[in-house]
Amino acid sequence: MPVRPLTRDQGWLLPPSLDDLVPDDHPVRFVAAFVEALSRADWQALGIAPEGDALGAPAYAAPVLLSVWLYGFMTGVRSSRKLEAACREQVPYLWVTGRQQPDHNTLWRFYQEHRQGLRTLLRRTVRTAIRAGLVDLAVQESGKRKDTSYKVMVRDIQHNPVTREVLHVDLYRVLLTERMEVEVPVVLVGIAPAVDRNQGTLVQSARTIHVEGLPGTLPSVVEVDISGLEEAHQAIHAKDIALPAGTSLASDPDLVIANVVPRRGISEAEEAEAAAEAAAEAAGAPTAAGQAAEEEPGRA
Image 1: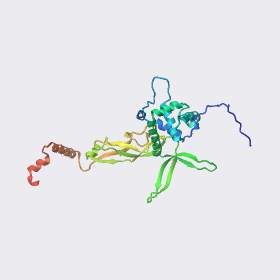
Image 2 (image 1 turned 120 degrees about the vertical axis):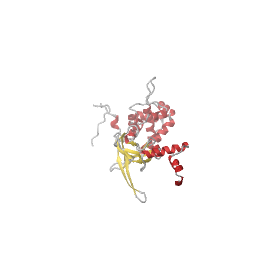
Image 3 (image 1 turned 180 degrees about the horizontal axis):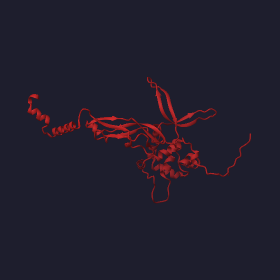
């Protein structure tokens, strides 16, 4: 059997790209998408200005250091010196840092200054992955000693209607670099003032909407605040929903999510008259009903 030649000084016709060396479903891409989706309020909670200071020597960007620590936590690397070595030697770290190589002192100071926030964010990344249904599926392929791992999402779970035993699970393989569309449940929160004043009934017309985004940024549920429904006939549409950063609405923007339906059998004039009667009674003034009772006591 011939032997392949070994040449370490061979040049490249085209420079290699680190992005080609990181699979589309690699967990480090989820970490990068998660950090990119952090809002300004999230950075402020950490006490970090991601844009840096205007004065002084250039420093490592906070998203770079945060990504290194989060991916380190996920892979069991918690030593700043080991992380420094990984940023020099391991392709996922080279990719997530953009080939920057922060030293262990820089990494340690960042961790010391934001220790509690980093732990909170780590728990948040885990919850985000679980809520998004992102799991690793290990497949034993013929002729291979090790299992092959794929990043998948849980699309549907079928249960036994009596025992609730899991009968079947539908999985969908995803690429963390490609946007996808999913159906997300809608949950109403708050109290509608129009309903609280008994002006009508709250009706939820749509219980799900379609959202598009990267797998790491897709929400598991969308909360809609109904406290803005002040009057009957008011409605909340899909375009009124605030979605997480990095995601967009894929449903019809004019889709009605919830609205207040006026009570049947009561006209607007009668509603206004009832409101005036209630106000007069509260003020101690004689009402129309009270005057009628005084004029015709026999009917009282």
